Image (cartoon, rainbow, N blue to C red; front, side, top):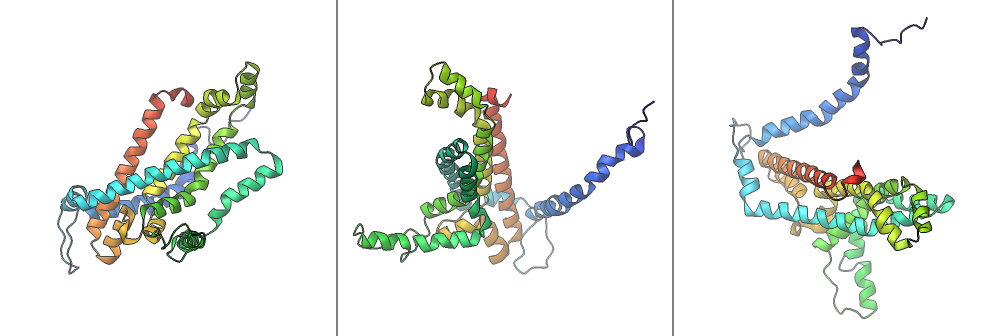
Length: 295
């Protein structure tokens, strides 16, 4: 007669999964839920420039964050830059991921190493590396001047173009890895069957490879968009005060102006909008013409 598995019955066995998950739950509560709760409460309080005074409940911070044309402009720029960075990394990253997928053995390992190598370098170092390239006396202007293509240095720093290129470089590996994971899960016999039925490479790609890789497109787009919308270091270094984004506004309110309630409200507006856009994006893709991929 077989003995029952330990914990298969009784109230004590039911507690085992919760006890195992308790450290992770406590860490999650302490590092994410509790700080967000404190910020949420702070966002509904009044701002006292003198500090130390009594605070009152107010929604004025959200009214300013959502009603002021300046903050709405910063919010629109943040979302616009995040969309452009996502599009650039997707357009450039898909061919790279496809080429890595077709590679094999040592070549594929070396290509993967080249893709993930930038992740081993500090984000600040990578941002200042682009400063060396885009500066008025940087590498790019030096080469253009020596080639006689321009007469005066181009103003590349503190522009949206510099921010887009810098963030696309930072988040490019995340897009490639997401796409590569999806491409590797495609059964290679499907392409062989399509070739045997007379389909060329282009038609096989559009009818088989691309639709089946859409989960990777979705995952990579979500990751890059969220990271780009909340980016701080790269837009601050390459964009400066001229290209302000929502994360920069939060930092400015907290550390320069010391208006913590408004900074908390701006942060929550960014969090809610980003989360909402991702939920809508996911729902539309699941119910749209490519929904069969996720079934």
